[in-house]
Amino acid sequence: MSGVEPSTLALFWAAVIAASIAIYVLLDGFDIGVGILFGTTRDELRREQMMATIAPFWDGNETWLIVIGASLFAAFPAVYAIFLGAFYLPVLLMLIGLIFRGVAFEFRYRTERMRWVWDGGFFYGSVVVAFVQGAAVGALMRGIPVENMQYAGGALDWLHPFPVLTGLGLVLGYALLGAGWLVLKSEGDVREWARARVFWLALAVFAVFGPAIAVALTVDISPGLREASARFDTFSLVAAAVGFYALLGVVACARGRRDAMPYALTALFFLAAFLALASMMWPYMIPYSVTVADAAAPEASLEFFFYAGAIALPVVAIYTIGVYWVFRGKVDRYQP
Image (cartoon, rainbow, N blue to C red):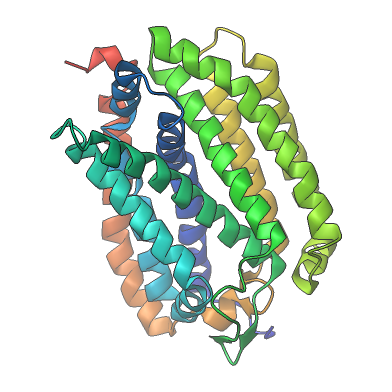
């Protein structure tokens, strides 16, 4: 770690990336979660309504993933290179999963005989996307080997017990977010079906926490996890406590009749967890070896990208807000 302080523009782009990750998780997380839940029912009418709740939003949600990748490539090229070197296989699997999810939206309605293929692609693609994203977070928390600003490990170094548990945890977390979204946006059978799963999914997320912490402290302990635990300061503790009580609130209100609460509390849980992780990892872009200052592009490049971002980022934000405003309310308000 260098002693150089990051410039204002480097901090700006780090903030853009952090905010984009949070927005992506909260928005694309629910439509990935709906895809995971999609594979747990065989009822065709229910499946169609589940897809209808995310149809206007899913492609716009994934725009934030592009913002993350483009910002990393432009503002922190070293991080982009190290991350892809460390997670080449997970990123490839994620892209395949996202492709199958997108294709399934169109192709499943074009055929009866092959519909099972696209339904399977939608479900398994969603599971794979969620798992590899969670596993990447767990692997970053463990720390990845970096030498001379290059990845120095193997293709499967990310595959450890702790990342596997964090991957499973994100699959369950996204499914919980998706169930909350279905309760919020649907009515009748689908709403009640999703409401019945909120309670058990919240308990399942709780159930993954214990083994993940135990594994991180015992069989899969690493220098990175030791440093992460040492960085668990007051802010991280408060954020973790907020996340814990938010998830506890999901369990408590799961059987209630307030449709907005499951999604809102689950979103609060994800946001609190993200803030706790960000606090523990700061100022590293690649924990615990590459800082924001180390990885930043030259100042002239950051300034050029700033002017491009000043145009592109508001457009993406306005589009996102506009779509959610136009398609607000329950599904039956805009479904033909």
